Amino acid sequence: MSFHPPQRTLMGPGPSDINPRVSQALARPTIGHLDPAFIGLMDETKTLLQYAFRTKNELTLPLSAPGSAGMEACFVNLIEPKDTVIVCANGVFGLRMKENVERIGATAVMVHDDWGNSISLEKVSDAIKQHPDAKALALVHAETSTGVKSDVAGLCSLAKENGLLTIVDTVTGLGGIEVSVDEWGADAVYSGTQKCLSCVPGISPLTFSPQAQEVISNRKTPVQSWFLDMNLIMGYWGQGTQRSYHHTAPVNAIYALHESLTILKEEGLENSWARHQHNHNALRAGLQSMGLNLVVDEQDRLPQLNAVAIPQGIDEAALRKQLLNDYHLEIGAGLGELAGKVWRIGLMGYSSRPENVRLCLSALEAGLLAQNVKLDTGEAIKAANGVYNQG
Ligand SMILES: *Cc1c(COP(=O)(O)O)cnc(C)c1O
Image 1 (spheres, rainbow, N blue to C red):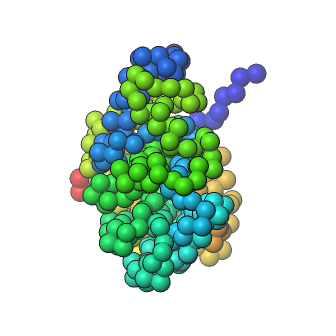
Image 2 (spheres, rainbow, N blue to C red):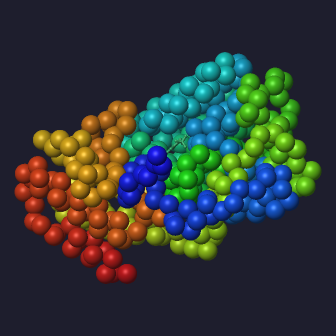
Image 3 (cartoon, helix red, strand yellow):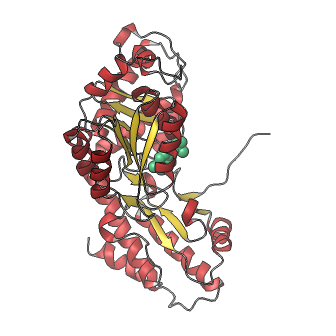
């Protein structure tokens, strides 16, 4: 029997809702991955990714694997056994970076910040002073586990001043908030397709600076992963019509990515960031009118990932279940240290729309009323509309 998934509205930490244009692109006929028509599409996709990342980096490509593989690709290509890497951790994904460093046989010097806070430049500066031999600084731009954004520009310039390479996770950042790879001077940056790009999951956009590319070409040891070795992948993604077989690209998923990047370019990066901020403002107004608070300080908040403190006495899992059953609406649970303490409401990419904000607020209101919270019915929508009516 065929599988027919339920029709959901996706407002969790990813995947996000997919624009129907992207689904249509996905369904187009599969062609060979070395077909001249596909090679043309590969070149266009690369140019669109350079636009999205705001970079001129030649080595910019969609890795045929999810964001976690993008993370691993950056580490295994730039880092060798016995290297030292300063790793910032203020949530789940920074901790995964540590795992990656240690599995290479390198040393991770950890800079911890509390979950819900941004990365402290002061602490990173101290760590750099204490470890002058460090090769790289690794950090998460948009921490999806907490809804925190960190100052990548500041962190990258700290690293550059001290001769460190930078590895930046912007899986949840790209398309939702400013990502400016060249301006930051970041060396290895990875993202994902299923967050603010609103494409199908399973691809990781990657970009490496010329300096990172040089480091990769001049390694003392071979990259431990054959599949993720950029020296080999460059031959597939970087050589025009001279492309040689490395693996079979996920042809239809690349159609989908090309379409989602085309949509982003049509809208314009700045407009997309402003849309994410605007819908966040409306959601926040509605949440606050119901007495629900965001856990992250305003200046560090990601508009696309809202960590909401769960009020005392609420059965948080029952509420999420009610949203899914009654509204076909998915919001996220807390992860790691914040499990059971927050809901994570995503407003990513195509999910970041006024009708979704209103649906979510109405559904939350019903969920809270069902658990005997005293509320003024309709206030949340009124508060959100107040933001939208200001234009
Ligand atoms: C989602 C996410 C990842 C992992 O991406 P997958 O596609 O799930 O492998 C990595 N880092 C951050 C910050 C994320 O939000």
